[in-house]
Length: 293
Image (cartoon, rainbow, N blue to C red):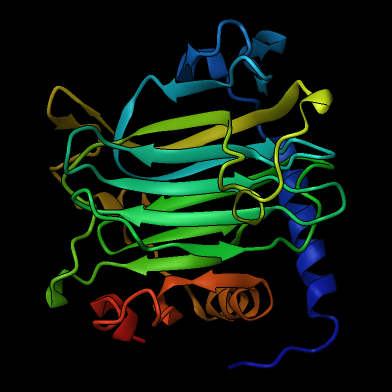
């Protein structure tokens, strides 16, 4: 495992701040154009002429939204500010998913906690209806104090989960050894804020404190550099290799050496669960992708 100088966390924070500043300079997306509120009876709101979206949860209901478009591969970015204070029992889910009994899905879930205790980022990848590929992380900052960018890079070779440009997880296409990979089903973006106090915080031991309601998560600066799927046709040109096209470098993107070092740093210091090391859960042997370096 690579070792890092003591200044590395400071350097990472500087990079994070720079990325956040650059993103804030970009023209704000109009969330009205990209998303539909799907449930919550008014608890989900699109505000400031489409610059801000908020989801709220109270004892009666949570809320959620979904993208107007479906995507088949893409680089998806969204800035989120998570529920502050005592968020125990709440889950903010932000994910890509297809439909049907053999669906594909790429998950970010943010598990709330008591005030002062860290959020847990729960990630998972489903392919052909099969998941059980959880990895969980703490963060190196307070995700409730400001907006941070959560990204999913999904191309035919790999899926990369990133936070403020720092990769935290890579799931490679290992169909060559029999591991299904999401590549044939278009997916929408979904997000919801809901009560999951039967399992979300310390295995369900800590319940939601409804005196703190309503709980609110906020979203802004959505960007999808992606192939939109409509009526069986992709928006990405088939006449030339898409990765050669301007702005579509993500279709063949992989982690360079610097990004690999940052991924290792996150996984060494902030990963708290990895299905690939949970031999008790898989007594017949770890999943085949876990044996690959």
